Image 1 (cartoon, rainbow, N blue to C red):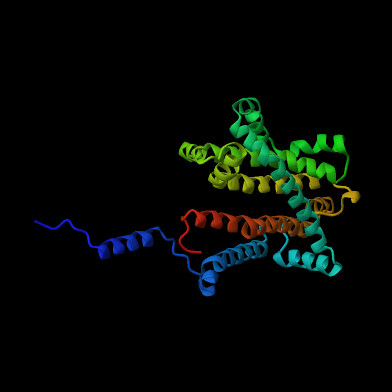
Image 2: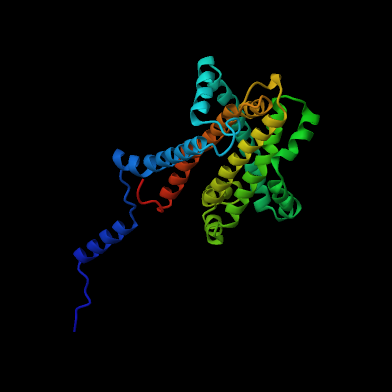
Length: 292
């Protein structure tokens, strides 16, 4: 008959094995691996797009004034750089977009918590938030101009109307996915009310909330571009939307392509520099990301 006694050394080995299974092995990714996995693929994709673009220009698939060459767009960017206006135009739009997004977060976060935690409020304004999220942001430009005039307040109003519903709905979705066991455990430990919201609900709802923030930024940026294109004025300064509209008015296709590329570049840069690190941090804190 086999012995059922367990030696202390066996228990220690068992504990060490369980600890090893629970531990998340985090290592620093070598620079070469980062370049191969994260830098090289998008660089190759950009090179492929430029190559195909140049081939289409050389094949003369359409008139030159309809499809400018990559060199013409580069020359347009170089001219703006030499004039000292390129960074100014980009910063005008980025500063507006970021400030409007931060205001949307400040409004949408408590609103989302209120909708998620109070049944009457959800029944009253929950469908309205969903409807506002599906409403194109460009629809708010005309009334915002009439209400507030051609100024920065109008720009921020359009951004808020486009982004707040996304932030709020993202948080509502995250709160709805919090396991009830977490809430009961929090109440047992004395975390109820605001303390429970801060220590239990918000951390548990963080993945959904982060998805809402990411979508809220996308809505902020698109809303701002729509407002700048439609409500252009010298008093508002020159942003990327105005740059695009000026290119259309002047039939300047290199300028139009440059504005489109810059708008796309800013959107990608914010995602890579802000939201991707936040997503990795959330995954790593939950043991879902093994490697950097």
